[in-house]
Image 1 (cartoon, rainbow, N blue to C red):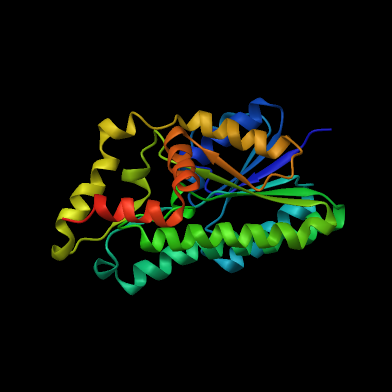
Image 2 (cartoon, rainbow, N blue to C red):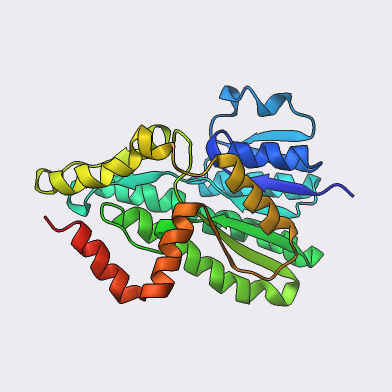
Length: 268
């Protein structure tokens, strides 16, 4: 029987690559995005349904999910929609902070809540919540972004316990850097004179040269596919060489030692 995955933020990057992979594997894909009229690739694929969805709009989430669950049996929900907000906290406006939280965190919570009854009633289903390396390890100029991603991780772990009794799995995929245009397309940057040296040093990680060393988005999509289909009760999937290196360093050194190491890197 054909399975169905619902993906938020499917218009580009990891969301699109995952939609393409699942479609190629024979799944029906419901690809949700803010501006479906701009989509030119997924709409040409068989068994791909494109829907408008802004995950910062709670009413649109509820109405969209209601329509989807009335017409389709969804097996996997991938909470992927999100963007980066980079900058020292002093450089960010309250509007920027609220928008980041509304999209990266509340979007995940609200989409998950909207689908929970559907999964509970059929006694199975998988939530795949896309976090980040910076949802496991803090980093300078990423305070609000990390706040949302750490929260997604904690939310996911708590929900994994809450929904286990119904045969529902909740998993977190935490990618590191990826070879996408995320730094251009999906990132807001704040600037503050007092943090110029820090910002310049951190920004090296978003250079074209550095991005070329990151994981291919198709490789991360493959890890997502494995998480969706491996039937393991595993909670976290760390994706990418840089992500695994940082995460393994934290395990080996211990949190406090790694924190001191990162502090020293950015003390001028």
